[in-house]
Image 1 (cartoon, helix red, strand yellow):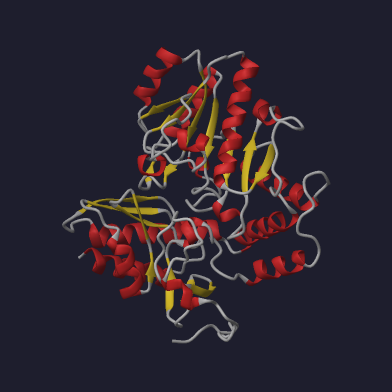
Image 2: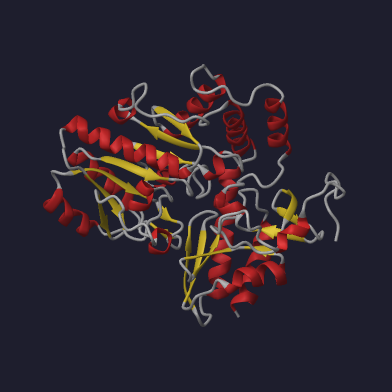
Length: 408
C-alpha cells in the first residue's frame, strides 16, 4: 500500500470522517466509505493507500486523468494571477477558449456557464427566443424519451428520468417527448404540432439513459428535418463531446452541424465549466442582458479548458479514445456476448454500456472493494464505462477481465 512519490500522506485528509455522512450535508448522495486522497493518470489512491483503476473518470469529467502535470501547472500559474473579475470586464482567456471551441466545432459563438445543466438551460432559452422571433406564442421543444439533460426545473422537464424528478410534479409543460431514434414518430408529431415546434434537443448517445447510441443516419435525418421546418437542432454533448466517442464531437460521425451545441464535463477536467455554442441566426439571439453568469467563463476555468484542448490534441487522445474504445468494446463482446444475463453490449469510443437482465448496482461496490476498479451503473440495469481518454491498451484488458469475473 504505497502512494505516488509526489503525494504527502502526512497532510490531514479527514479520512476518519468519511465513514459517516456528516449531518450538516443534505442527503442528496449516498457515497461509499472510500475516500480518494490522490490520483495520477488513470489511477487513484484511497486514504488507506490502496490503488485503483478509474473506469468512470468522475462520470466522464477527468478526461485527461488525474493530476495531469500541465493542468496542475496551469492552475498554479493562474491562481497566482487572477481567479475572477466578472463578465463586466474583458477576459482574453475566455475569448481564446471561445475561438478554440468554435474552430473545432464549426460553430460561431459561445456562452460559458458552470455546468452541463446551465449549458442546456442556455440552449432552452435560445429555443424560446427563436420562438419569439418566429412569432410562435405557445412553442414546443421536441425532446426524447429516456433522455437526461440536467437537474434544474427546465432541464428536468426536458428529461425523462422519473427517479430524479420525483416530488417535482409541476414541471414545465412545453416539451414534446418522442421515442429516441424513431423518425416515424417525429413525422407524426410534425403533422400534429408542427406550427408550434421550434427546436429539437437530443443526445447523440443517451448516457444516463443507459448508453443508447443513436441509429446510424438518425442525426443526419434530424438535421434535414429541422432545416426543412425552421427548427433549431440542439445537441446535448455534455457527455459525448471533446473526444470521448473517437471524434471531437459525436455529431462529426454523421458529417453534420447542429444549430446549438452544449458541452461540459471533460472541458475543465474537474473544474466546473459548461459551454453553449451556436451558429447562424441562433448565435445572434442573445443580446447584452438577456443571459449571463456570475462565475461563468472566469480566467481560471477558461485557461484550464484551453490547456485541456491543447493536451487532447497534442497527446492524440481523440484517436486513442477511438482505438482503445474499439478494443474495449470488441473485447467485452467477445468475453460476454454468450454469457447468461447479458442483454446487450453497446457504445462508441470510450463510452460503453453493458446491459444486464437484472438490477446490477451491487456490482459497483464489488468492483470497488474486491477488484479496485471504479465503474458506474445507470438505469439500474446497465454498467457504464467512461474511463479517461488516456487509457492504455493493457488497462482495457484489466477492465475486460474484472467485468467478466463480476458478471459471472
